Every structure is written in structure tokens, then in C-alpha cells.
Image (cartoon, rainbow, N blue to C red; front, side):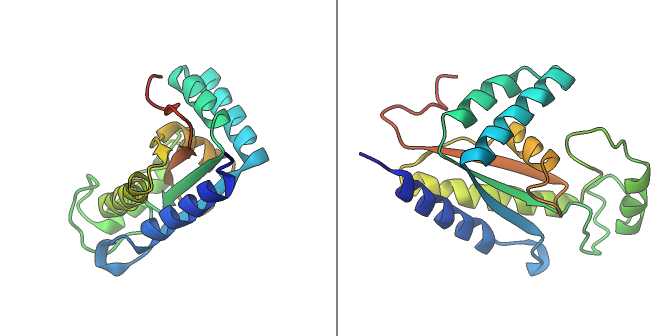
Length: 179
């Protein structure tokens, strides 16, 4: 039985869950994109390139998972955007100090920082809401830092500084379980 259209529907429903997830002060800086076909192949290739560059071997394993998936939902957030709360959770006394530290942060990292801790939490809540929907729909999935990092490099989420990828699969056994 073919499940491609059902997987696309699941990804769309997951995207709705991420979009409608609660966010700090009701301010939404979440980006969402569904990757398919050639985009998945390019994502896997970029993940392998990152593995070569960084020595993070799990990127190779995760790239194989992407190749065995029909769909990958990527969700990111603009972590440079602040809410003016001056909460200090980012490690800086004020939001203005955090924003000024962005210009001196290393540029060769997978995620760009520092990031607003509330925006980072918003991303986690959005990702959690998306995978909750996948679980309700019985769609196998895995939250991947590696896929999100590669999606950022490829420009899939141009306004995001942090992101995660969630590949999806419908098979007799989850490809994400015994990795």
C-alpha cells in the first residue's frame, strides 16, 4: 500500500500543530517547511558534509535515515529576536546585551547564537506539538538536530538561527528505532 499522500497530510497537520503551539507573549518567530524528494537527497548530502567537517559521525547515520524517509518537516526559530523581558536566561543581563553579543559570536557554528531562551523554548514547544500530532497519527518520526542544522545551511529556513528536522516514515518497522 502506498502512503505518500497520507504522509504529506500528516506533515501538514504537524505543521499546523507547530504553528498553533503556544509562544512567548504570543509572538511567533517559528518557520516551518516540508521537504520532499530532491530536497531530502540534498539534505542528506549536506548532513554527510557536516559530518566530514565536524567529525560528528551521527550525522552520517541520520543522513541514512533521511534517505529512508519520504518527508521531512523542518522547524526553526529566529533566536536573535527578543521579547524585551530582560530575563537573563540567555546568559546576558538584558536583551540588548544579548543582541550586541550576536556580532561577536563565532560564525562557523551549526546554530547561530546567542539565542533568546524563550525563543528556544518556543521552538521546543512547536517541535513537541508537531511530534505529538505524528504520534496521534501513528507516523514514525525522529527529532533531529542534524537535519535541522543541514536545513539551515541549505537556506530552507532563512530567518531561523536554530532548527530541528523531523523525518517521517510509514513502514512495518520504524527506521528511527534501532539506529
